Amino acid sequence: MHEKRVVITGAGSGLGRALAFCFAENGWRVACADIRLDRAQDTVRLMREFGVGAMALKVDVGSDASMEAMRDEILAAWDGVDCVVNNAGVACAGSVAQTSLDDWRWTLNIDLMGVVRGCHAFLPVLLEQGSGHLVNIASFAGFANAPRMGAYSAAKAGVISLSETLRAELAGSKVNVSVVCPAFFPTNLMDTARAPESDKATAKKFMAKATQNADDIAAIIYREIQRGTFLVLPTKGERGRWRIKRFAPELFFRKLVALAGKAGGGT
Image (cartoon, rainbow, N blue to C red):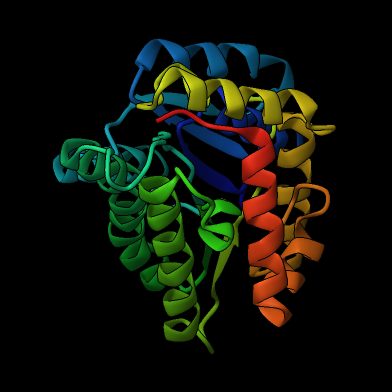
């Protein structure tokens, strides 16, 4: 049996790096792709202790040509891939009325179209080889639709919808799909966020209160991928909140508005 191969976008930091370590620890060869090559190289350097094959690649998931070039580079080195984790993303916050159209385009191009590009680039490869797994990192924001997160929530809801469509299209094949919807946990996502400082501060407060870190989330994601789970809700409490949203949407809405009011937010 060949050594399994995974490509992870946004592998230079945060959840992407934690996932790279998790796959490597389990014997996978890992292609670490990031818009910052130096960060991807750092991830590869830190993975040497696992004794697996790894490579660092520069990719801009917001560019068709960059994603296709990354795919071609990986296939030239490996002649196939077993798992594609579309993880790279950005954050945006602010009211719908005040979020600029440029920020909407930026968020949707990376958080939604970046995943579309990853699926579009690699799905034909997985279908041709007759097996594989697409893992799309969305967010619980795609279900919650909290105030002041319109662009981000819309993008993540799109990733959930895309993943459900892919699941239906691939039913009966040996290509699996998972969509991952975590809530807040500590990452450096706010470093590049386009948001008022008050919204960044609110997000950081939620991150600081989290009882799970990126390594915890990565371990759960890896486990659920091996099980073939479609909807992965890795942060504590989100499965219960998802059930409330599904079966008692008005109750969920009231709780969401109340929580948002307590958290505050900028204008």
